[in-house]
Length: 118
Image 1 (cartoon, one colour):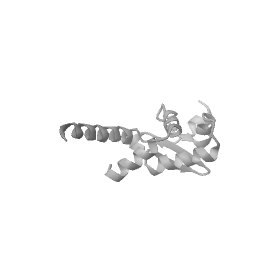
Image 2: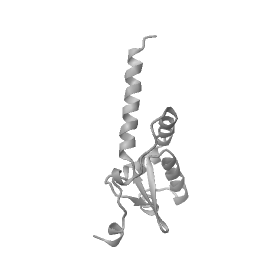
Image 3: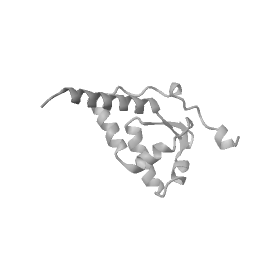
């Protein structure tokens, strides 16, 4: 195992502070955060439950670091990503449970709309 890998902080769901409740406002915030293809590509980089630093994310993109940082900010504000600060490093962790809860809420909306006749 290389030193970069061994220096990673824990990033399992139980290691993260809880996300805020999925209010209508937070559902909309998550929806807006997911509404950009580059942010979806960033999320896809989190295939394993290991945190990533910005440079690792930039290395897998054709975008400038400043652009990636802006996308990361939006994902953080939507609580999709959580950041752990470790000196100069910022480790990003994906809240998979939040995405699963978001999907369930959207499915509930779709089901509720099927019951209403106009």
